[in-house]
Image 1 (cartoon, rainbow, N blue to C red):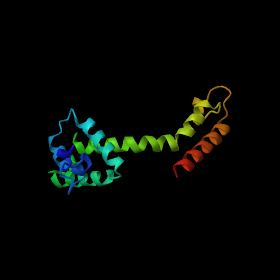
Image 2 (cartoon, one colour):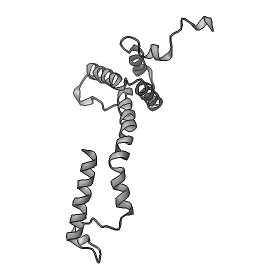
Image 3 (cartoon, rainbow, N blue to C red):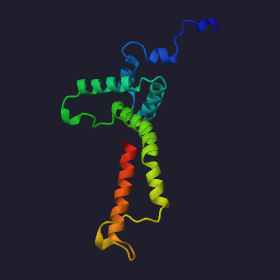
Image 4 (cartoon, rainbow, N blue to C red):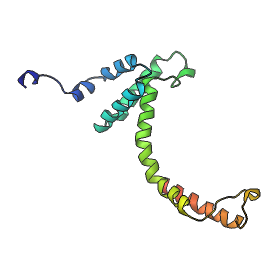
Length: 145
């Protein structure tokens, strides 16, 4: 084990200096591996609470090296894949926490929410449905905000 005492840990290499390893990965990662690499990077950086540092770096580089503004974030680059992986990671938790309870309520409730009068089914009441929808939207907005 003494022969490894001067070796750096993976985290030390990844987070060293200007995150040059990440820049290099962006250049060499194939399109077929981009999703897996992006997910792994997001997980490692998220564990160390440095994800936004990486995303900022990738965005700066993407902007700096694009020839035209019309192609920014439109290709299958590692940058776009990292942003997607991050939004999936944090977005899933946010959605489950904020709108999950409201969606579960809608699915298990006998209330109706149709407000397009020609589409009302027999026995539905437009005024009740409007009130149901208002209440639902208030709950949803209350959870989001």
